[in-house]
Amino acid sequence: MAHKARKSSFPNTVVAVVVLGAAWAAPALAADPFASNNGLYPGANEWNGPYRNLNYEYPATTENKWFATAPRDALSIGNAGVYVAKLKAYLEQTMQGMIEDPDNWDPAANDWYGMIWQGDGARGPNGVTDPGSGQEAILGSFSGQIITQATFAESGLTVDMQNHTVIYYDALSATMLDKLWADPFQPDRSAVSFPEGGMVVKAAAVTPTPDQWPVVEGSSIWNVYRPTVAELQNPSYNPFTNGKATVVPLRVLQFDIIVKDTTAAPQTGWVFVTYVYDKDAPGQTTWDKLVPLGAMWGNDPEFARQPTGTDPAGGPLQETWINPAAPAYAQSSLGWGGRLSGPIDVAERHNVLLTNGVRVPVMKTSSCLSCHGTAQFPFVSNLYPSPNRAFPREGTLFPMYPPGSEMWARWFQNRPGSMPQNNNVGAVALDYDMLIMFALSAFDAAAGNDVYVQEHVDVH
Image (cartoon, rainbow, N blue to C red):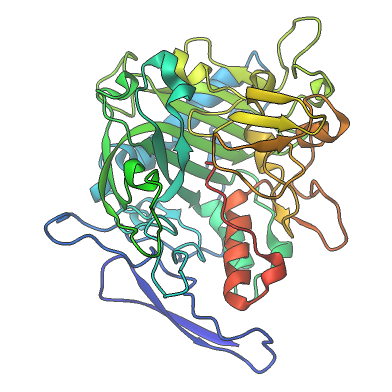
């Protein structure tokens, strides 16, 4: 099989030319693995700014720069704050521009990389692209699900909101992507093992204005080309018949960094860190006002069978550190038992039906690590502790196992990234990376391997 990729003269696209070898059993792939977006662009009267070009020139080798300055001790509640502060300072030079000046920030110039097989949007039977799917054109962002107003009513949210995120891999992590996607049409799933010190970042901005949610006052403004929340909630909305994107202004809310560090996190190998916007924090810029919400390096499995998810003696979790000075709106978004989960991560679900027949109007259901720990091929587990593979929209009925039950506890174990949560025959762990799982699903959809395809899950 041979393939070539060349950049198009049209902004923010890549055109792939594919020749399929005789041994390839699936039908010819129409999808473009190198697409930076879903191909839908605003008119000149809507947007006259630049379009972000994503970077897929994965390096074969590079050095681990983070460990030269990182603390080299196992994390604890006592020292996690130091790790979190140093991590943000380490990334300031390459990441501050993405947060505050998105129209002029270039991934390649800052040595950050995107994920292939994520550009194309879903298409209907008439060939029309869903304007809310795939990566959009302006920033190459992904769209999360709609979060109900009730979730943040106490902090003044007056409307339902949607988040839009960008996700990037540092050069060290990209050396693994270079192996996984050495041939984009025959991915080497066994290559998914992040090198020590590799990082992934996810930044998110949300749709409410400061008048609709005071917590975003003064935050940097991003623009994406997507349907509005009002349009998505219209009962007659159909993405393939009357779907329409528009330029939607957003406010930056959350910045996540995950680091492969088996010294800091010997049980799982991963440190998850979340920063949130605090309009009252010291400093002049949005970057300055991104303060730690917390860090998580394990699932505290010794408390996984406690219905509350916490130490029955009243003590704190041992593998999650929460910044006591984090803004109240963000602390209200924490996951099960107080485990780390950011405001856009939808750890709190409404309208839950437990498998023992009990209905729960609202409950904390997950955390950063419990969600990412389900990343494997083939995909068999819900991101939440649920018997279903389906992911209902927030507010619609969601079946779940009873908190603290044996089945529930499977999501709150500490496993290395080489061990899948469901160790079925042929299962391959994907080292806690959800985007790789979605990218492999997109490849399988294009290749006609329908048995391995799952619907993209807008939960981030």
